[in-house]
Image (cartoon, rainbow, N blue to C red; front, side, top):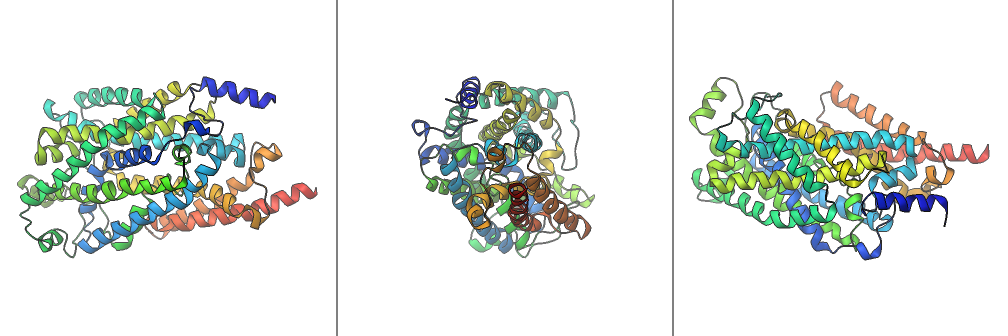
Length: 473
């Protein structure tokens, strides 16, 4: 047994048995049912209570929203099934360890740090969502759509307590995260369905035409928002989880799957959460928009508040408060777990427990600032755009390394700690398309796929050149 392998076994034991630096063994593989509950729970969750209403603020039409979500979510499921889970069951490694083999330890440290922090910010937005529900009995002032800073001591205390509880659950590892999601997800799904039905009654919907007319041909976006078309909805919903599927983050989850077909379970998250739940959440916001308070804000040129707790409470009472709290948990838990894995790749000898607590602490601090939740559409688009192209490196190497004539896991084989081909491929693709987005005011989700494809192609070309140069020198 080599010294390196002995060191990896020791690291694995210290890490708490989550197999961060070795393939998941056959005895620890899980059936599709584990993933069904996790994805249904994670994606019928806290973000949905924010994203649904935010869609309404963009002045989207009925056709663009309903059909755009239908097709965009289909593309997301296909991406998970044929890219993420396909690679995951063959390699059975975390995203971070797989990147280390390709990029080298020094380069992957920067990626892991950025990935972990972005995951923490997303989890922080979900802690914010849960806090809007917990704050109702305390008559807490709710954050506004334009708020960025904490609005009072009650808010701060509630966020800190929620963050501590969520972090402790996530620190217990994948099994605990999966069990928590399985237990909570049916309650949350039922709550979204109930919210939608109650909202339809409150809106006086008696036919499909009435339902369609809620959005109709669309209208002007609310103050501070941009107008969404079919293509905005399609690409945004496809790439809302770009970091997880084409960005390969969920290699860390699907490495536990028995078969690649477990990737189809993501449909439970997409069509229950990113379809039914988004529309249901939009409906309860539509009810609020008709109130005198909301109309007064619109008359003053301000967008009505998007506070999930009060919206759900107005629809289904105490059950709504419970649902929003649980919904925030089921998104924050696996997100903090993923962030912990990212940090553990930087500090491999640290235990899973402590790196997850670190991730949870950062997420809790982020949760104090409502801007991450109130600007969720923009943040999610940016988050996917930054991380997705790195996933192209793994995808293109896995499927095209033979055709391109490059060595798989080159950093590991050549014993290098910094693969310049990866950095250049990401930097050029990210820089070019981010410049296009900013300079020409192009919706960021429109350039995510081109950036991903360019990064993959550049990686193959640059790797071919650099590897040939090294082998012939």
